[in-house]
Image (cartoon, rainbow, N blue to C red; front, side, top):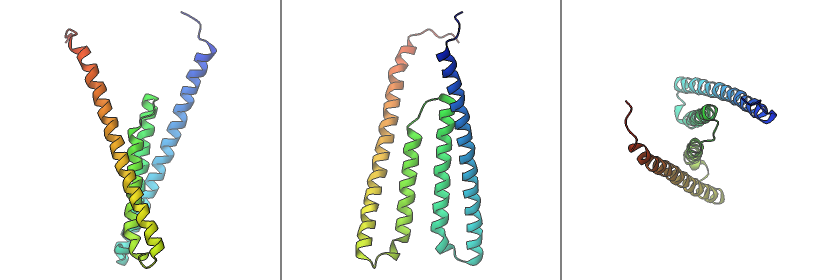
Length: 166
């Protein structure tokens, strides 16, 4: 057996350091998501008690969608920790949620800016760009999934010729 080189030692150490940092990031994100969700629940209960749910609903929805995004990032961190590879699909999902979240906030508050034509025009342009972003991310997700299924299909015939050992 050969003696380990300094580069293999350094690679192993950096790998462990990466894992530690990813765990810390995951813990921080989960704590943030829990705090945001708790705040949203408190806001919801307060709004129901004060009968202001119509006014507060947008902020509560905004916070809940932020929690969803945060947990999707936690999922991505967990995948990275397990496989030590960067997986693209969760980032596409986070981007889609973020764009949809912004679209919901804009549409919910758009009645406040209808009296200002320039601002309303800018808002419509932003909505159009966000819609295009969601479509692009959906197409990218579809292409990614399709390419993964093609890779799996191409790899499958290689194993069909092998004898069954079970």
